[in-house]
Image 1 (tube, rainbow, N blue to C red):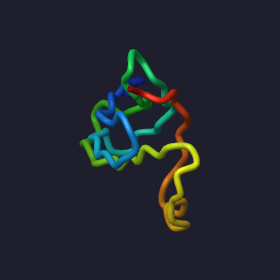
Image 2 (cartoon, one colour):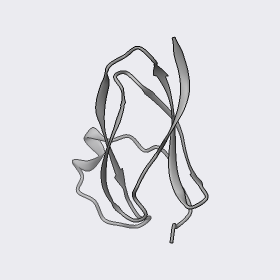
Image 3 (cartoon, rainbow, N blue to C red):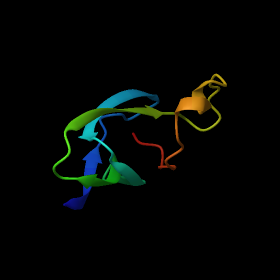
Length: 81
């Protein structure tokens, strides 16, 4: 059985974060909700959990070219204070 689940990020600025998602989760959307970055994903409720590596990057922040080889752009959120 699948469901849409929300996952909160701790990040409030640029940086790396690891969250646990069911294996094979499909990230659908990213948004800001009351000052917290939230990721919405379609997940298999019976799948074992796996690590998902999230990188928060400021607009205009320089990043190495290889950064784009392994990561997927999820979206933009307002600057969080």
